Image (tube, rainbow, N blue to C red; front, side, top):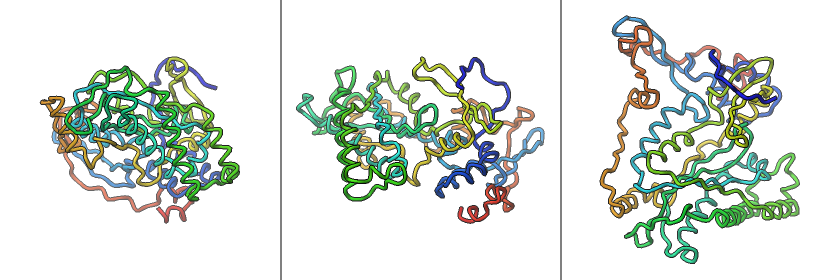
Amino acid sequence: MEKTINSSRGEKSPEMADIFCKYGKGYIESHPMPLEHYKIMNAIVVCRTASLGGHVEVCDSCGETRNSYNSCRNRHCPKCQALTKARWLEARQAELLPVPYFHNVFTLPHELNLIILCNKRILLDILFKAVSATLKEFAQNPTRYKEGGKIGFTAILHTWDQKLRDHFHLHCVIPAGYLSNDGDRWIHSKKKFLFPVKALSRVFRGKFMEMLEEAFQQNNLIFPGKISAIGTNAGFRKLKKELFSKEWVVYSKQPFGGPKQVLAYLSRYTHRVAISNNRILDMGNNTITFSYRDRKNDNEKKSMPLKANEFIRRFLLHALPKKLMRIRHSGFLANRCKKKDLLKCRKILEQNNIPEKQSNKSVKELMLELTGQDISTCPFCKKGKLQKMLKIPEQTGPGFFERLNLTTMKDTL
C-alpha cells in the first residue's frame, strides 16, 4: 500500500548495502544472475568498509583518531557518485554558451522493455544513435528551417521511473540554436521550442525502428523466454506494426533561463543511480519501504513498500553493461571537434568571460562546494584538522560472498 509522506524520519535510514547484507543471499538463491550483478552487489556492500582498506586520520588539535575507508567507485553505488558528478560538472561549466538551453526527453515505448533488458548494450546504443541522428537531421534540414547548421547537445541515459521500474529514456540538454554550416554564424532559435515535438517523435521512431530491424536481420539480438515469439519473422513483423501504430513520446520542456539553470539541471540528472540511499525509509519483515514522487499528482512525495526480492530485482534492472557510456556529447560538443567548434561559437557570440576548467581542485575543495562542509575538520573537537597518519591495508579475511557461503562466486570476482 502506498502512503503519503508528511514528515521526514529522525533516525538513520537503511542503505543499499544493508539491504544486500540482509536479503542478498535469499535473492541470489532464488534468482539466476549474471556475473556483473554479483560484482555490483559486492562493490556496494564493501564500499567504505575495512574490506577496501583506507587510512587512519588524527586530529592535530585534540589528538582523536578515526578510520577513513576507501570507496568502491562503482557507478551503480549510491555512495560513490557525488565526487564524480562534481568533477564532471566542473568540466561542463567550462563549455557553457551565453544562450538559453532546451531540455528534450526521448522515451522508448514499454513494448520494447523486455527486449532491451535482454539486449542492453545493442539497443541502448541504438537509442543514442537514433536520438543523435534525429536532432542532427532537424538542424541540417533546410526545408523545415531557413538555414541548416551544426547542433550540439549532451544526452543522458535514464532507465528507471520513480518506482524503480524499467523506463528507458534520454534527457537531452541543447543550446538554443546551432552553428552555421560555414562556421561563421550562430543561428538563434526564434521559437518557444527548438524543433516541433510531433515531427521529432515521428523521425525518432523511424530511425530507431530502422536500426532495430537492421540488428534483427543481422541476428545481433537474442529473444529468450517470454519474448521468444518476437524472435521469429512473424513475431518481429507484429511488433513493428504495433510500434509504428502509436506515437512515441518526445517531451520538450521550457527553455532554461541561462547557464546557472543548466548546471542546476545537470547536477540532478547526470550521475544519479536508480535510487539514492536517502530514499530508502525502512527495511524489515522482508519488506523495503522507499519514497518516490508521484508525477501524476503534482509530484507529491509518497512511500511504497516492496518485498525485498522485488526491490533488489528492480534495482538490478538498471545495471548497465560494462563500459557502456550513459552520458554522451554530440554535434559541436562531441569530443573530436569540441575544442575548435566551441571556440568558433564563443567568438561569434562574443563570449568574453569564459569559465576556466579548474581540474586541479582537491577532494576537500570539491566536497566543500557540494556539501558546505570541510571534510578535513575534526568531527570531535570541530576545530582541528585531520591528518593522514597510517595506511589501512585491504582486508584479507572472509568477504561478502564468503559470509553468504557463496565462495565459488567470490573466487570469480
